Image (cartoon, rainbow, N blue to C red; front, side, top):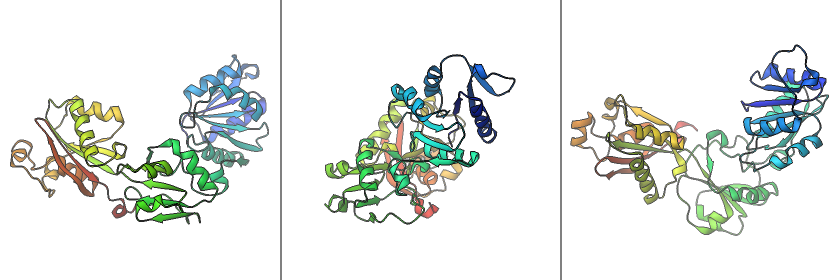
Length: 358
């Protein structure tokens, strides 16, 4: 459920409905026109226009709940819309709380899920109109969202979604990432395939590709949505003078040369030294990639293809980059250590989600 919610109402009934929601979602902020002001705590009373309040809420909140007519909401937000990837969820509730309507950003913004939750709180009827939900089929723009998968080619989502809800044949190819992305029987028009080239056949109108490998075939790119699971762990060996640019250039070069996607990096891993160069943390922060530090004693127990006596002498373990990527991923080493003299080594491991039961 969205954690940053604004509830905007303009009637006394709206205030009561807002309070019922806030009882279950204490973090929600309630905005009410000041003409209704009383001694109630926990309410932000506003004198400016409702239009201005909604404009500000659009910038500040993940979700906006409006307790007034749907038509009024549409007019108030029409000039604020940007796209489905950035617009907040907008939910509309009538003045008697009969219906909770998912009005905007139903999937990516979470309006559908929040509407259902609010409807449960109010004992109301949730109104969901997105085709994937109505037809109980795969929501292409949400697949793997709970695993933090990234969609590489979002421009294809609308077209592939249309094929999905129109029950045209769609193939799913997966070679990396969590496998439990659908918890019921697959829709009858969706097939799991073992060979990615099958997607190029005319009988498949579209494809869903779940992979950490770079896709270069123009036809596959054109007819598929490509999902990037968080399946790669980049192990790093470095010196104190290794710069952020050194790190980024090295990682990108290794991934590119081995046909792997930067978007699929789950985390970085390296030796624990008590402290690290600022460049490592700044790179991690820049891309929101977690950083795991591992004790040298644990690293030294890992069997690697390229142990080094020199590294053992200075670090207390015969491997840093390869051992880190293997240990952190819990899977297999897919790229042996690549050296970038004088101050960086890079290796890549792949998480075995099947073995982990995911």
